[in-house]
Image (cartoon, rainbow, N blue to C red):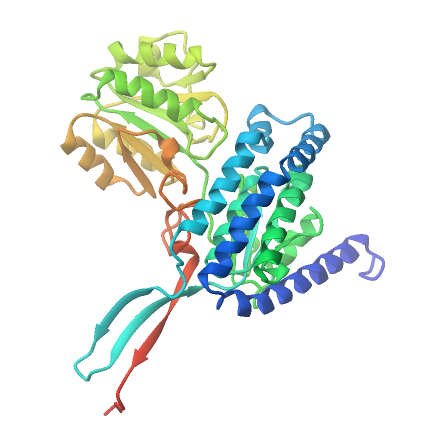
Length: 428
């Protein structure tokens, strides 16, 4: 078939035209938004939060339609997709918390004076037009809209097909806020449908989109990294570890691990692997397993762990590199901090790791030896969250080595420019 009659070609052309229209409108809106004073942006966020509460019934009905249309979802996927009154309230509170944060745009990040009297200032500025591709969690759209808006960057949102109705209902609330503040509606746009061709158009939109942020599973992130012609701020899988050191408080270890694994198994900060020192494994591991089994957890264990608890299923090498996003926990017995770090380097995704110990030197060695974006001492890995960091919300968890790492909030959504102030200096 030629391009004129090929339906796929027609679909791609329609998606490209839709993306170009949205991106051009967003670039025009960027001129307004980048200069908008804080009270205007905050009014948009506060009004959108009020709209989320006022339209709660509509949002729940839209979410129910999404859930009904996808009956074969896994338990973890269904949990990520499901909205409740409490989760809608959390979205609204998140918008209000972002509004309460200082305006990141225009901050003087550094200032110095050269011997010739020139004053140099590094000043925070918006990135430009951002595209956000996310999958099942509809609240991600609200978080992304809030953060990009406050950071002065228009955003084009493309949610997963499973959350189409929920995302549209949430977007309507964001538009209420933009209208109330007198800001262009193009400051927060959504894809017209869930056609994958629209994603392809986003990835090739160099010159129209300044940054793409994918938030979803390995398949999505891999596709974006392989095909994008636009800069990408991505995160890898959440292969998080909790390491119980030989000098751990046993009660703390039990409490923290239960939360780290089972609070919400479908989030990227959920612990996927327990590492436990050989010295305490015989006494503590049975208690940890009993605690988690009571909560509905299954296990995959190495030989040393199965020597203590023979009934545990054996773990394959691939299991230790699997992000379960489900009530399944890998278990490996290690010989001290360096052994734990070696396991994390071989199997981890540089997301989030925790150590449980009363030994400050061991904790320091563990945290200093990590390459991961976030390390915790005596706390649950599920604290890897923008709200818990005091960012109000997050647009994702960055695990790369450039620009931003860990939860991406307002400051990480800005770049900078330089202002140089002189008194008539000329260069010799």
